[in-house]
Image 1 (tube, rainbow, N blue to C red):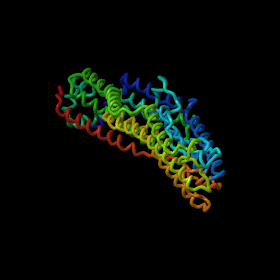
Image 2 (tube, one colour):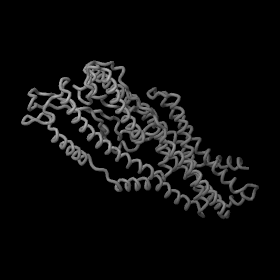
Image 3 (cartoon, helix red, strand yellow):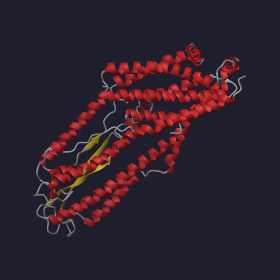
Length: 484
């Protein structure tokens, strides 16, 4: 009996105008997505070419420094670290053009004439520090809306409403609900049949659209697919199923609670607008005002003040008097070299601490906003898709953590290599206090970004929980509703 009613529901849905609209619009959007990301000028191929060129330039510079001396490499650092473009950006764009794709290990040099003992001019180079660069891409109105799979998923949740608002209320108004329930079928079975009918009707055009999308992208030849990519795409299809299922249960709940289909449609539309737009926007605004982040100008002023205090204490290479840094560092003057190391270390610690704290505060605010906005299943769907696609702010958070670990790995490598040179003073981070011998560039540890999918677990768990909650609500509502 369940399958009979399910087939009846599918047949009824296939004959409606809403299905005709969806079977036209959904594949059209999927093909448009494939054309934009597969053949667009700023697609994956262009991003990968730019990425590899930047990597080659960085490695060439690092090789040149290493072949000159370990001390030069130690002071200049590993250079800029780039975030690899995501092959599945067409699935979840994640507003990557608004997120920085580079972290820079920057350096600073200076010069001064020494007073007291030192009369020669000393050109010094301060040790590199990690800087967080802003995005190189501007944002305008045309870049805020992307026809990716997330947008199509939100579009589908709207169509789910159109397929379920009258699933029970319409039957009750026509008098067919009581007639069907007069047969040997329970209300739970009836609800299940209604659910399956809507679910299969919606999944058919979705699967067709996804297959067309992947075929066009594959034929473009611009985005290569590997085994892990196919697994992630399969996981995204599962996310679509969970997302659609939630709104089917929500539609069945409202359809069984109200007396007519129009009222059900109004309540469903209001709920959809709140979940898709109002709740995420209000919560994001609330979190932004709850803990305001200092501006770049404030952070820069704070950093300049603290660095000026250190400069006033050490006064490197003052002409008028003997100061802590009135002598240039050299292999023959270990005490002066250690003082310069103290100076560089304290400056580096201040710049690192201020920069890290500022970025951490920004990321904590973003993380809090993400956690609160996940009261909406639409937002959960978006975050889970971005997690599987390797895009969005969570990917950037993982990138920052991995670069910070690499920062320490690089420093430890320099110190270890320096200890193997008996002629070195082993004083970090001063070039004259480190080994002046060349080293093998191939021995330098390379940064390798490792994908992480831990951010997917929580939103997927919430999607499953939403399904259970709305299933329970729909079941209880249908059990108590009047059949006439």
